[in-house]
Amino acid sequence: MDSRKILVIEDNAKNMKLVHLLLTMGEHQVLESTDAEQGIQIARQEKPDLILMDIQLPGMDGLQATGIIKADPQLADIPIVALTSYAMESDQARALDTGCEGYLSKPIDTKTFLGVVETFLQPDSGDAVAVLQKRKHNDVRILVVDDNHKVVSLRNTTTFCRRLTTASQHWR
Ligand code: MN
Image (cartoon, rainbow, N blue to C red; front, side):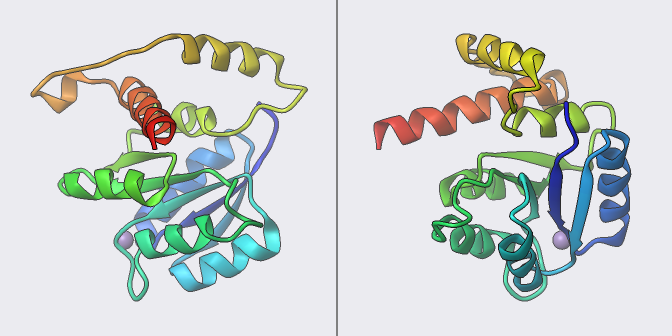
């Protein structure tokens, strides 16, 4: 996939460092903010291709920030992927309700992180393979029901959660 501009809004220095490293390994440009207000400012100035949004932030939280971004016609098309704590399952549903395209659970799975993030990036004309993969994904409906979270791979969870979002938009 071509290099893209990704804004990361995350107040935890350790997580920021890890996310930055993983995105850089994918040759993406990383913009950083440790709070929501500054993150929204950067989004307005830089028009990133994707926003990774921590939910638990000091001051304005990630859900409020998502609401503001999605209400701004200049920014509404930027996909937002919430970074939610594994322990805070309610945040995941709330993130999707607020308009996030998907979520990733922390602690971050370093093996799958980049691949999952890239599924949320719009392929451009140079990404023929990505377009094909995306089409293939859209044709597949996967419902994973399991009480053991570890059995469910991150990629499938995200695919399902994206389908859920799409479906709920459809029904609205
Ligand atoms: Mn946080």
